[in-house]
Every structure is written in structure tokens, then in C-alpha cells.
Amino acid sequence: MSRYIPPALRGKQNAAASPAARATRNDRETQPSPANFFSYNEIHHHYWPEWDPYKDPYTAARRKSGQEVSEDATIGIDQGEASKPAESTDSKTPHDEAKDGVKDAEKEEVHDNGGFLESQHGTLNGSAAKKDELVYMMIFRGANPRWPTDKIVFVHTNLRLLPKSKGNEAETGTTNSDTPAAAEERSSDLPSNSSSPFASSSQPSLPTCIAVFAQPEKCYTTHEPDSRNFKFVGYHKIQHMQLLQPHSAELVHMLKQKWDLGRKRESKRVAESWKSSLNQEWAVLKLVLDYDANSNLENPKVEHLEDRNLGEKKNVTPQKSVNGLLKEMRMEENKDSKEGPEDVTGASDT
Image (cartoon, rainbow, N blue to C red; front, side, top):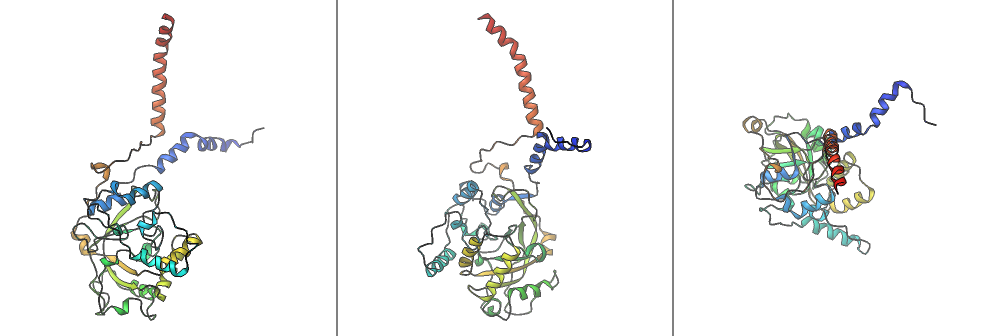
């Protein structure tokens, strides 16, 4: 006996259960990204023209496995190492694991692909013309929980692109007198258009005119390197920078804040991340809009890769809409109906 459905709900239920309705929702989920959204690969190729993402072994491995390309895909682990299967640590002592973490942090693999350093796949990036300068930043959704509200970024890769000063000991996390939280709160209270927020001579000259690309908080696309889920959010400058030394109390405080406010992770992953992250130097960056750069410079002209004859294109069959599928079915039916009598006649002649 079928379940009774009130008349007022029958039409809605049938519409929701129909294949057309389900396909329409799928079409909405797989629709192309807007023209002002770019993929991870497209942005990197814009600044490194000789770099071919389709020939990059790490990018290909991530694309195949669907792994996130953020530097925090496995927090505290080098991206090159993140794509490799985890080794068993049953026979290793804590001392050995700490040493391995230091080696991973210091390891910088260079892949001969347009002069692009593999370690530059991350939040801080240089360019082919300015390899040793901070040119653009990639803000990954969920990896920087303070970015949407305070424009604060936690980063541990490519710190060589940040300026350092000998008189900057007070900003390096070697003392407990100024924690990252205190420094962040102090910087967030300053005017956003202040060109020199700190009068201290220990603060080095900080980079300006940094192109920032960020993933929206609500993003319907995937984390694959070909997915267009990054948007240019303007040119920024670093208002305040604080370096956190390995194993310092400030670093512990920052990591707790990062993980408590950020994405939830498995307890095993968090434990492994602690071991590796505490062995590395981190930086806390407070960014503000660079009004001069945004007024005088054009937005980066990032091109979509399918518009260029670049590398080996993926052999992907485009998804068809429901109307397109129904149209093809009708065409096949009409074709069969026309060919049917001819086939019958031909069969009788034989």
C-alpha cells in the first residue's frame, strides 16, 4: 500500500524527485566559474610564464589524487613531501622524528620547470622577474582563519621573501613579553591607511604592492589545482610582521589559535602537525589595502589556460545539460524511426 501524500504536496514532491530537477542542481554545481575567478595553476603561470603546470610532477600528483594544494594541506609538512605516502614511524624515537621534521623544513626541492622553485607553491610567492621578492600571495580558504575579519596571515614557507633586520629581535618571538595575539590586536587598532604604523626603528621596510588572490569562504568548486576558486582581492601591503622562532611560546600560542579557529582536523593529523610545525620558523603578517597601488595599477591580467596552447590538455569530456541530453535522445529516436522502414525493406529483399 502506497503512502498517502496530501494533494498540496504531491506536485512539489514529484518535481523534487524528478531526474530533471536533480540534474538541474548538478548543472548548478558544475557550472563554469566567473571570468574573474582563476585557478591555482593559472595564477602561478601568469607570474612564471615558462612554468608548465601540466608537466609539473607534484601538481599532476595532486590533480590525480584530488589533494588540496594549499601549503596547509598537511600543516607543517612540505608540499613536496605531502604528496608522498606517509612512512611508518613505529620504529622511530621522538628524537628521530624531531630530526626528520627539521630536515623536511629545511629541504627545498628545485624542479627545472621554467626556473620555478617548488617551495614557492604556497602563500608567499615571487615571480620569474623577481625571484627574491614578495610579488603575490595565495590565501587558501580555511588555512588562515584570521584573514576574513582581520587580514592576518600565518605562514611558514618562503619566509626568505620577507625582509629581515638585525635590530628586529623584539619582533622575532624570542621573548614572552609580546605574544602574537597582543601584536595582532595592537596592529588591528591602527588606521588602515597608515603608511608607517610603527615608529620603532627595528621594524624593517615592509613589502608593498602585493597582489593578493583569495578563495572565498563559500566556494562551490573543488580544491584541485585546475579549479577556478581564487579571486583577485586587490593590491595589499604588509602593515606589521612578526617572526616566531621554533619551539617558542609565541609559536605555540599562534598554532593553537590557527587550529582552533581554522578547519577541524583529525587528532592524529594534529599530533603529527605539532611535531613538524614546532620545528619551523613562522611569520604573522598583518595586511592592509595599498590604496596607491590600487588607484594607479591595473588588475593582473591572468589568462585562463584553455585559452592558450599550453602543455598537455586534460582529456575531459564536457558535462552536458539535461536539455542537451534530451535533445540528443530525440535526435536518436527520429533517426531510428527514419531508418527503421529502410532496414525492414532491405531485410525482406534478402
